[in-house]
Length: 386
Image (tube, rainbow, N blue to C red):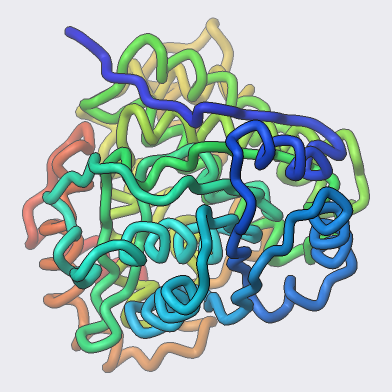
């Protein structure tokens, strides 16, 4: 089987590499970037330093700071309006997954008379867009290296997965220094998101030897360091490891796929505005248990890569130990359930049929080792409340 691999044209990883942005822009002869970020990051000193670095090289950047968590079609259209109002030749997304996803959507729509729904999966969009530079400030989404964006329809609350090379950044600058001030809750949620990326990339029906190697390395790194940075957010070595692992996991799933956890997680975020990594964490133990029998050997390899099982136990035992370890991880990271997040039970159960349908239609569950029916997805959503 042939594996199709797509990567950013330039990928720089390491402490302080975000300061190389002026050199990168000049190497591509880009002179008028639009920076897209959120309101919080827009006020942080490092963003002013990035802008000052650009000015020192004669590059004046525009700034859009209204990217929002779980970006919507309405917020994307605001960014498109800013892009079209200036003479910009590239887009720079700075932040977690939401600002980077916003930047991807703005770069695509800025030169097209189209709506985001036109690009919803199963549509694949490979046509060129404005050059896109991604600078992550969390170690989770891996969006800096992926050919995906997720945008919520403001009218229907559906989280739309959009895919294709049009969404793959031209350049990624992965600087772990930008994650050193992440709060503990955000650290936990984004870290679990990255771990899920690695595991789903490995067990996906679209996996390849290329993605397997990255996914196994990433999940081991992430699992070993996630509790460390949760307990001590200033641990620089663990922060560097988490950033590297998240990028490796992003490359892995971008060239393999995600699966049932992500398929179910997106509707939770769209309907109840739960952080993506948090909803992944809620789902991961139950979805893994649901899927074990269809890929026992693959899950056993995950367990051994994560260090929760040894070669001395059977694959069946190792796979079950992985489920047990995920339950304990959620306890250690204080992961709440839907009830603890303040979602009324009647509202949760009322939305389940719609969420299950949206999950199935996204296509991600079809890449799961055990492909669920809509009724099985509904049952998993109901069990999540228990």
